[in-house]
Amino acid sequence: MSGDGLGGAGDRPPAGVTVRSAERADLLGVFRVEKAVFTQPWPFAAFEKLLDAPAFLVADGAGTDRGSGDDGVAAGDVLGYVVGDLTPNHGRDIGHVKDIAVRPAAQGQGLGRTLLRRALYVLAGDGASVVKLEVRESNHRAQSLYADEGFDPARRIPRYYADGEAAFVMLLDVDEWARGDDADPA
Image (cartoon, rainbow, N blue to C red; front, side, top):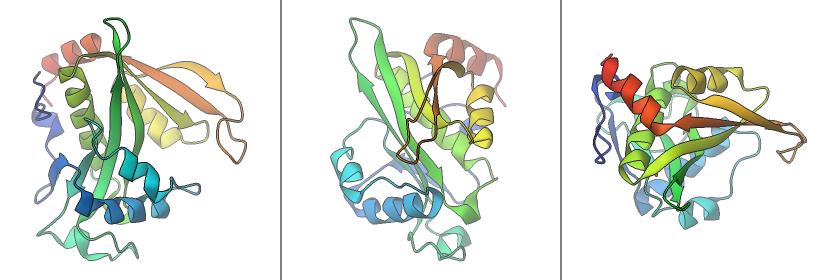
C-alpha cells in the first residue's frame, strides 16, 4: 500500500477515466453531480471549504463519451467524486469519508468503488488507522459497497438527515483492510 493513492489492480478506473485530486475548476462539476444524486445536496460552499482535504478526488472522464451530459447532468468531465479528510486523534488518526457520488449515467461501472478505494489509500497514507462514514439507512446499495470493502456498522443515529431519516455510522480498520487488499489483487 502506498500513500500516493494509486492502489492495486482492483482500483483501476474504467478505460479513459482518470482519478485525481480535485481542483478549483472541478467544483462546479462536483456540485452538479451532487445535485443530481442527492435529494438534500451539500451547498457549493461546502465543497469550496474542503478543496484542500487530502482525499478530495474526482473521476475525470475527459476524452470519453461519459462526460457528454447524456444523463442531463452538465458536469463537464466530472463523472464522480469522493471527499475524505483526516482528524488527528492521539496517534490513532481518524479518516472520514464525508461524501461520495457518481453521476447517474456513469453508475454501475465500478467507479464508486474505485473512488472509495483511492480515498482509503490516501487516508491510510496520511496516517488514518480507522475510517468512518455515514450512510442513509435506506441506501442499501451504498451499504453493500461499504460492507464489501470491510466497513462494519458501528451505530445508528436517528434523524441524522434533515428529512428525518436515520444514518448508520460505519467503520473500517485500515490495517485490516490493507491486509485484505494486499491478499486480493482483483
